[in-house]
Length: 160
Image (tube, rainbow, N blue to C red; front, side):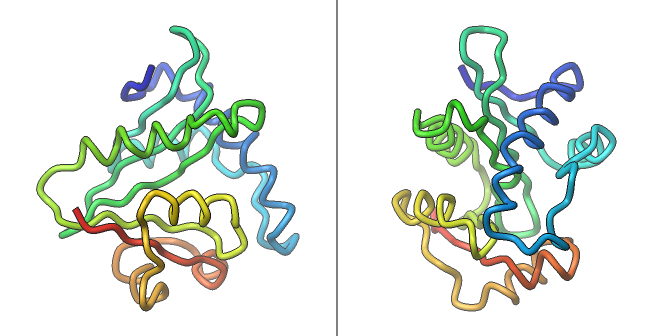
């Protein structure tokens, strides 16, 4: 089941994010790994400008999260995380398809990810996303992220 998340889901969502983000240690330099990846306060701040969605196993076990944010003329898919033990079960793909289906009023979806995140990059390409011609320009135009993350990130785009 996929549904929008509420404040009541915050702690479970933060657990999913921080657990799934541990794999960043495999490809990010140590100084760029943030632990935790997201705090409850950061999750709440993000929730003020985007909509969080969650994938549940059964009615109560949150196993994946993803967020949808509108910025000017595009929709951004953000914060895609799936618990390691539920990866390869199409949880991320189902969340992505659900959010893509919820997008209204724009003609393009953008997803940012780390350049070294080969899992996400492969999944995005399989889903029809293409690497942006100028990822740095896209990141500067549509995202507010720290410089260290900007330097190590790329963007993918998909027209609607």
